[in-house]
Length: 224
Image (cartoon, rainbow, N blue to C red; front, side):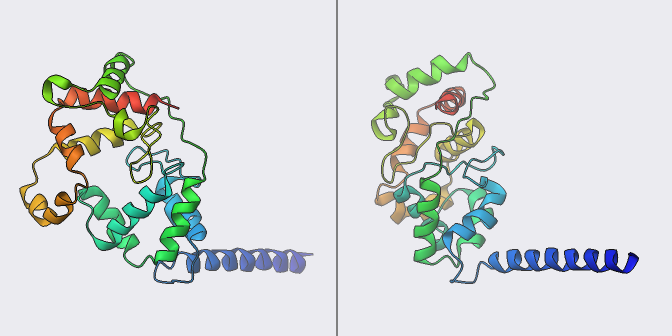
C-alpha cells in the first residue's frame, strides 16, 4: 500500500510539474506562436485580471475597452512611445516582442469582456462635482466637458478610451501625468503631440485643479 501511495504521489507531482511547465512555456513573451488569448489569461491577467477587471488600482481595467484603443496603446508600448513613466516601467519590456497578430488578438479578447463595475469610491461628496465637470467642463478655465469625446456614459469610442468603472486612483494618476510639465518628455514626443494624440488631454488637465481631477476620477469610477 505504501508503494502504491508513493507511486500515486509521484504521478501527481509529475502531472503538476508538467502543467507548470506548459504554463511557463506559454509565458515566453518572445514566442510569436503564443496566441493573444493565452497571453491575456496567463500574462496580462497577473496585473489586469483574468477578465480584464483589475482589482489593484495601480493597474487599469481593460475589460470592454475598444479594440482600436487597446491596439493603439499596445503598439505605443511596443514602440516605446507611451509617456506614462509607470507604464514604461511595466509595459515596455512586456510588449516589446508582441506581433501585430498578438496585439489584434489581445485587443479582441479584452474588448469582449464584461464592462467593469467599480463602486468603491472614497468620498461621495465628490460625485456631483465630478459629474458637473464631466458633463459641462470647467469653462472658466477653458476646459470643455469630457463627454464630448468619451461619450455620454464615458463608454469611449474607437481610439478614445472607455473611462466608466475605471479605478479612480488610476484615472487621477493619468490626469496628473497629462497635467505635469515634462519638458524633456514633451521634446522627445514632439511628433506625437503634433499629431494631436494627448494634446487635448494636456489642455484639459492643465485647466483643472488637483481636487477637480480627483472629483472627475471619483465620478467616473462610480459609473457602470
